[in-house]
Image 1 (cartoon, one colour):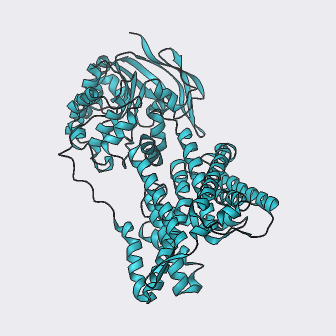
Image 2 (spheres, helix red, strand yellow; image 1 turned 90 degrees about the vertical axis):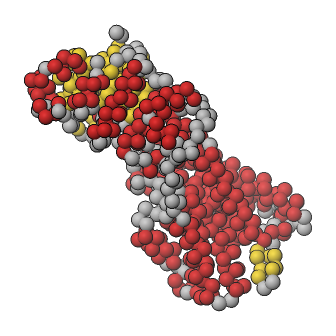
Image 3 (cartoon, chains in turn purple, cyan; image 1 turned 90 degrees about the horizontal axis):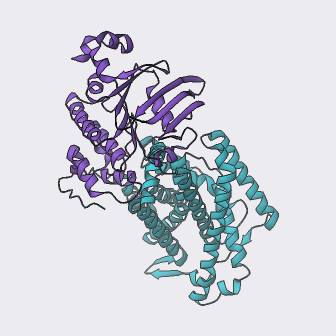
Length: 240
Length: 336
């Protein structure tokens, strides 16, 4: 499987703080790669750096063989990268429809694509003309993901989609992400919820202190509890 | 565009109409205080006309402020330049402007207004590229740069036209009033109200019915996410900046004709008023700006009539009262 995204020696500073300290990894095409790690490890910074929201001070980032580390955020998005931030960042003053119209950069909304999205996010159809600000947290997350997939994207960067959501909504969101995955999407997914990571991930990367400290198959990490405890500080309760 | 049925949509959130009712409530409360019906109508019409002119000047600033978090203290320069461009066109063609034919008056007034908008829009392009672009995200430097720009513009106008007040008479067709019973309604004030309202409707239509408008509304709320969707918000901002500058120029023309005079510090005088309107309305909110402009004008007119000594501080008092009620303005769009 060829690498769609490749980071080599990426270093990012936020103000005086040296957050990413030489990040190297590859995201294989058509697979879901989980990016795990403790709070403050640099996961969100990694996604924001790929997206050009923070500039890498050193290193290279390539998307389908093209260097993108010097490109602006709109240029990176136009190359087919969809981004779902941790904060969801739906436009609360706009309706669900307007949020999606805006996300469909290349033309009008495609009915078939919409029908597919409504298949696993029926709430978005129900609340089509409601202001996004009036949606619940889970529905906002659905809208945020729908915005990223309303047009075909090469790569999806998704930051902690299950954060702060009720367990039932998390389960439904996992099913949605599995459906997106079945369509062959390439996903780099930051997640703190190990259950979600185990369900969704093909590959796994673990970060600590701004570097990748482990890479491999998700199934192997899921089967190795001592390694989980060592890398992620997970206790047995995390699996229940 | 997909035609998805939305029959089972959420009940629409209640529209926040309290700010919309404020001008009407204020106007009604003034009836017993003013006493005379004709004085009340005259003051109310004057307030609406003045409010519309202030709205025209402030509408661009609120979008610039809300969309890109840019403190443009030089906005008044566009007002002054707009007024002077109209003066340069109208004075040599005074015979047309003072002719007894409405068509002849409009034949000189409309090109003057359009030229003012063109010049101030182009000036906006230069100001954004030269003064604002290098200081994005740095409020203190923005204040220094744009205030400096205002001073340079003002001094340039002094150098070119001198320090004296230049008369700018209204075209003949716009002089006088319509008399309805005891009430006289100035033709020019009526025109100002119509132009201001038309611009408000046009901006609302663009913001709510077009993709550019969606982008502006989304950008006011979260410009980073708009960029992450693949849109170049800087280019959008430049367009908004130029449009706001052109509208300020048009406001300058209308204000100059309203006062029938122009002077180099006209923009300087109006800057504070325009900022008060933007803050009262809520940064980035066109509806808030519209209501805020009417409130500011009402307080100035009613206050000036009832308690002339309070006129100088009335707008500051209004701003304090509104911010105590709604700390982020009448309609909060951004989180700032």
